[in-house]
Structures are given as C-alpha cells and as structure tokens.
Image (cartoon, rainbow, N blue to C red; front, side, top):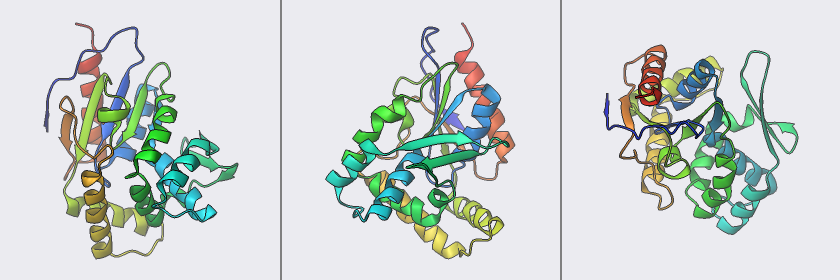
Length: 237
C-alpha cells in the first residue's frame, strides 16, 4: 500500500472521497461501507453506465452508436434509492432494474459504452450533482482524474487479475448464477484493456491518489484503511 499526499481539504467545500480502480478490485463494497460509516452520500458511477447500456439494449440502439447513446444518456429517467436493509435500489423509466444492471452482460456492455466520449460527457454533470453535505463517496474509474479532480481524498484500489476473477466467481455462485472462472478471467482482462486504452477518461490512478492493493486483504481491513486515510486527510492542521 502506497500513495502520494492529497491536497488539504477546504472547510467551505463539501468533501469528496473518490475510489477508483479496475473491475473486481472491491470498489463497490468498500465505497458502500465507507459511505455508511461516514454518513455520506454515495455515487455509483458504474451503475450509470450500466443503465445507459441496458436502456440501449431495450431500445435497440447499437452499443457503438455514439451520437444516439449520448442523447440517450442525457435524457434517461434514473432514480436511486435503498430498501429497508440499506441495499441499493435502481429504477429506470420507473421500473426497478437493480438486478438487471448487475449481470455480467450489463457490465461488459457498460464497459463498451463507457469508452465513448459522447456518453461520458453526457453523464459528467449528472455525476457532479451527487455532491451534497456532509460529503460524497464516489465509486468509479475516473472519479479522481476527471469527474472530481479537486476531491479532498483520492484512493485507487487494485488487486491481482486472478483474485478479481475469483471474487466475481464467488459472488455469482452465491447468487446461483452459472459461470466459469476461465470465462470470467477473460472478461476481466478484456474489460481492463478497454478501460485502460480508451481515449476518453482512461482508467489510471491520479498522481495524488493513495494506492491500495487489496489482494489477499479482507474487505473490513480495506475499509478500515480507507477510513484512516480520510481522517488523516481531513483532520485540521
């Protein structure tokens, strides 16, 4: 675990914690836990791209039709909420699509539409509007580099490809979804390549992000470290 120092937070600005990283690095789980512990709002940027991809599938829009996808992203009727247990719920055009956007197909489709500048531009303002007191935890791949470049705290999570594939395999098995470790490894490698090589907001750690390798580390330990970093960065003096 290593990283450079982040800029000190200004007291008159709502603090933002960005957590970026590749698929399977644990961003979603860590971000939800951190947001709950801090009492801050949560931005799941990946869900926005999954929603665009799902809506495109439903409306027969090709996943490489950049102009049409950009217009779609601008006008989507999206709502986020939570159930009694605090689990995230997502609605698209008034319909609950929480499960639909968490499939492997939706994830791979999201990686494709996320590579399009028109889609990223269309969603930029929507993502920034999530900022609200007392603070925001932003989960994604370009949160610290593009969406919130002035964030008070930036973290970049990594993990080995094998570990990430194993985590996803376990998640799918627990949900009763058929999958093979080999196929998941290939999909993760392909998604990594798309995310790293895209011209629009490629996946990269910002210079002032703290790098955390989560390989072989429990979620609870990672969350504790994240909260320690937040306290260090936001403590006065």
